[in-house]
Image (cartoon, rainbow, N blue to C red; front, side, top):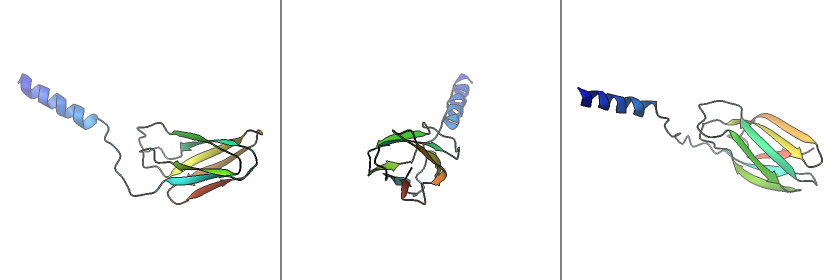
Length: 110
């Protein structure tokens, strides 16, 4: 009896544990392109909440007149992200519900 309860407890623990995300074949790699003459810092948060198991904040820095290739795959299966770019000059640019599965670049211009 005690062994049966231990096995059931073990099985219950296994079914409640989070499972790793399965690859869905969607490319979430996007070039963040800075067209301004000043550097920027960008942040991204998933618009969709699909049981995130990893932090949903992605951030990085892009030099003036340059780009940064970013993989937005955070393991959640989300494609839509709210993006924000803050320039060192104080200006900010936002893109709500940016589709990282459909777009290959986000061209940021103040």
